Image: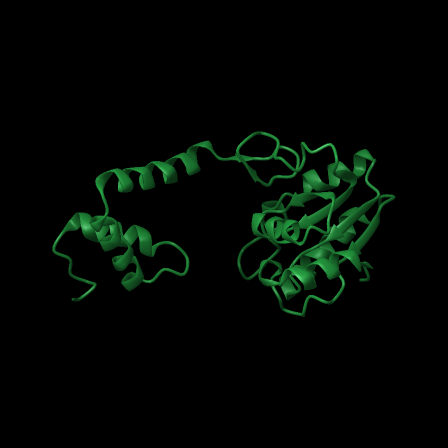
Length: 204
């Protein structure tokens, strides 16, 4: 069957929507749509309602900007976490990866991306101002840069250091147990845990 000709406009529209997701080609999108058509109507309805609720009801923590079901996420509301220690990450996947190591008891700050001139992501597109406000307000002993060890990650680290270095705060990075070019969310838990525990002072 040609994926340029569909017997139903509804089918074609559904395939186009699935194919708009990153990493999903049109053949995969077609298989997913056909799978939904084979399911009970109640299952498909629940699937659709779940996606709609995700988009309409999801919260971004007012403190760390991570994804949450409430205004303040479970980590930021946990009295046992060390609020003087902030781990700066790119996204929620990185928070989940670090939490899975069970080696970190501080809090997080989610940037929402990393600086990428090629990708059109500027510092103003990220949650950097709110990070600086936290550090400026005091009470922060250490900021850990836990960004991917890519050119974009290193560029973001340098920019953040220039913004935060003027304040009385220790700035560290993950130990290089994380290989150059690695994305944090794909690093195994043992390596990532060691990288957090053996972090180093940031060097320009």
